[in-house]
Length: 453
Image 1 (cartoon, rainbow, N blue to C red):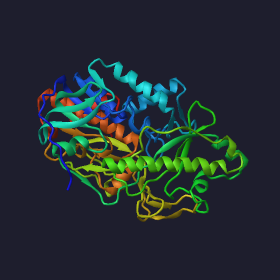
Image 2 (image 1 turned 135 degrees about the vertical axis):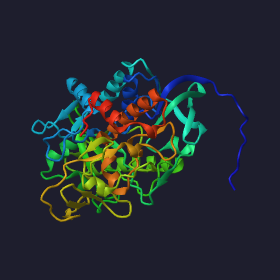
Image 3 (image 1 turned 30 degrees about the vertical axis):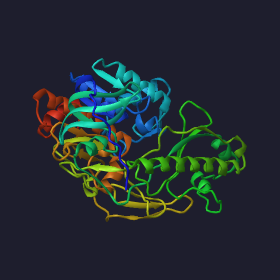
Image 4 (image 1 turned 180 degrees about the vertical axis):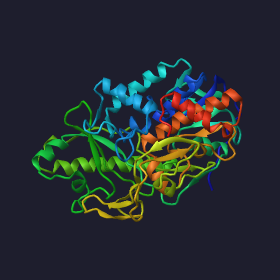
């Protein structure tokens, strides 16, 4: 039987009163706060780390996927994502493929963290709370009046009229009684790392494949066969961001499992370094940086007014309340077998395992015309029973296949902007979040630079 300790009742000081409180300072959360502030709302922004950016900065994930449809010719994503890429480009901290200007961007995530600071500081209506952890919600399920945080000062409360859960794990929803669910087969988390000298190994070995090398089953410390990819760190010659670790069957919304996953992933990072050191040219290989947090793909899912389905994504269904567009493929990292499965809007399917030939097929027959992008409806951000609470980021309601596409950053960023704008519109009318007019929401997003199709 678990032992319990009774805490004495205590009065928690209200340190701040605001219109909207955003919990989670990833790019998704920052963009929500910025859009709400630009529409006149006062905003509190709570972040556990000492800097903003979430998995992009704390997790070292340095690639943002395409802002275009699958043809590469039509821009489908704008807003603060495009603005941030442009800001970083001016500092030489973002690189795009010169032949495909709307293709993915490689970012220097240290520079990204500082740009996000500047974005927040330029909005006086935003009060940031760094090194602050959300611990409790005050109010009835669906209608919250305040959030409790713990920080260096102690236990404090932030009173807010509307709340946006951008925690990724649905911490606000779970602790306030709003509905969430977990799928039985969670996609495994990955810890990235910055490694120096991989380019030297590649120069010494024509045809060198990083994934095949670090997942080589002949080596006792080989990594699990998941997905291994890498990107040069923009502006730092010889330094590479590597995403290759894989911790199966870890639910990182559980504190103990998160602890074990973090440590297991770091052991895999060290194993990666040791394997590469054994290759020709490997004497230059060294660990340069570890992430502040493991990259979590999946934990809780919000239960919202609409669950986006895989077929709605793959068929490119258009929604009258669409607030985000995407073209990233369905990408499912398996926990019950090696590798991952990609499904594309043109009907192709690829099963990929590092070090082995990919297996290609089709999830549907050829069509005369394929969709070139998909959409997320506002209803997938509104939890069942919510009066003044919205979701954003990877928490958005989707089934397994749809989630495998929309969980990437360029899509999550758009949901942050949409939640911030929707909360500000609801605030103006003192209305429940479900009552926000879709046409007004889409117009306000477009006015702020988002692409509405």
